[in-house]
Image (cartoon, rainbow, N blue to C red; front, side, top):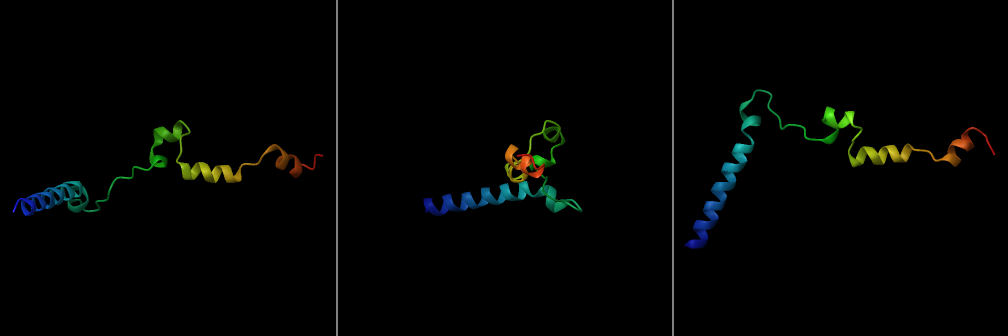
Length: 75
């Protein structure tokens, strides 16, 4: 009896939490979850802070001194 009551209470609490989290999405006409990605923040972009994926992409395209000298044909 106690286990069923506990499981039932947990399911009810979880259902209420999910509904409260989705209120904005459900009841707005074009509702959607807010974008919390680092790149979408103007303040962080202004400081030059970006996500790890962007930093990895930038590191792939970064050339070291030897590669730059090779492009300029400097021996």
